[in-house]
Length: 297
Image (cartoon, rainbow, N blue to C red):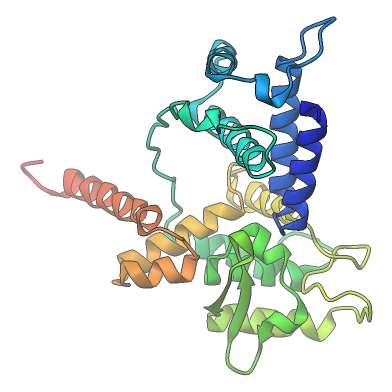
């Protein structure tokens, strides 16, 4: 089969296996660009078996020439590697040449984290109704869950009514790879959720916990828009996004003495090394305090 056909089959398989719509769109876009690179004007792209290591290195060099970031190049390379794993499994190629391409190193960047005071001030502003919004109870519940539970925006958008254990104060969250985990709710998050559920419109055919103005599921884009609206208006910071609250959640738990393994479970990280970046954030904050306060600093 042609490369274009094989890409279509691979993307369809990703969707069937339960990859998030965001991931499917990202892979589809990156692989479409890969196909475009291999399709110069007037020529057909090579068959999958005709793509060798030299071709992939030339493609990778073209990404560097575009001055893309290392993170973006790593993402595009991951999409191509996934495609070749699929091609190898389907017998379309004999060797996964994408495995032989060296992954570019991405600079380690520490997340910028709100202080507990900044996070609480913003959420208090949401609760006070300083903005005239059509669904203030929903908006407050949204912020309380993001900061109080530390879940991803995709996990929040994917919550259904049956995922909330209102009596025990737990959320059943479906994370990356459709892995489920239990996340405890804070008292503030639970209270805000109760107030929202008391006025949530009854939609028999809609299981989503958070609804948009049309009565359908509130999407990740909708949640991000709400966060940006409030953070810009109340905190004067349009750079805040849903993941900012996840960073704050993890960092503040660690600063409060929580065990790193426990934080890993709460966040749903597959690797402890992913969670350990928050120890670097705490050390950075500690050094800032030291430099400011110690007379010999």
